Amino acid sequence: MAGGGVALLGYGLYVLAGLPPRAEVRALVRTNPRETSVMRQREAEARKAGRKPRRVQQWVSLRQVSRALIYAVVAAEDAKFFGHEGFDWVAMRESVERDVKRRRFSRGGSTITQQLAKNLYFSTHKTITRKLRELIVTSWIEDEVSKPRILELYLNLIEWGDGIYGCEAASRFYYGEPAAALDDTEAAGLAAMIPNPRRINPRVAPQRFARAQRRVLRMMRWQGYLRWDVKGLGHAPPSPTPSQEEEADVEAE
Image (cartoon, rainbow, N blue to C red; front, side, top):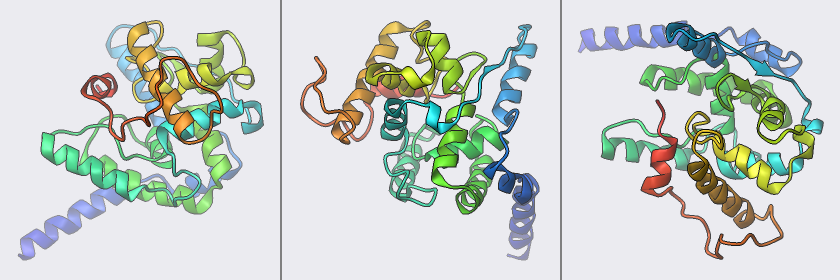
C-alpha cells in the first residue's frame, strides 16, 4: 500500500513537472504567442521525413474574423463554449466511455479551451499524462483569460493543413480571401477541417471534406446560426455522435 502511494505521488510530481509556468499562461491575456508546441512537433516531423518545414501564419484580431467562422467553429467544436468553465463534463464522460468500449483513444470531449491548451503546450500524441496536464492548464486559461480572447488565440494558432496555422492563413490558402470575408459555407468548410486538417482537406480528399462540411452546416443550422436551408442537408438534427464513416475521417495519427 505504501509503495503504491509513493508511486502515485511520484507520478503526480511528474505530471506537475511538465506544466508550463503559470505566468506564461497569464501572459496570454496581452501577448500573442509566436509559436506553439504543436508547431514545433510538426516541424520536427517534417525534418525527420526529409521535408523542409514551413509555417504560414498571419495574426488577426477577433474583429477581423467573420461571424460565420466564429459560429461554425463554436457549433462544430464546442457548442457550450460561452457557458462552461473550460470543460464539457458530459462530452468528456461519453468520450471516456467510447474509449473504454473500443479499447483505444478516440477524438471527442475536448472543448475549445482544452484544444488551445494542447496546441500551445503539449502535442497531438494521446496519453493519460498529456490529458492530465491539459486539464490543469485548461483551468488556468479559463481563470486568467476571457472567452473572446481564448477564441481569438484558438483561431490564430490551430493547425489548418500542412504548415498552415490560423484562420487568416487558412482562409487565404483555401479560398483566396481574408477570414473577414468568409461566408457560411466557406466557414463551415474551415471548421470541418479542424478535427484532422491533413485528412479532411479539400485539396487532399474533396469528397471527405464535403461530407464533413455538410455536417458542420447541419450543426450550425440546428444551433440557430443559419436562417436558410441548404440543399441536401435534410430537416433532421445531426446525429449527436458521428457515423462510423465520419469518425474514421477524424481519427488522429
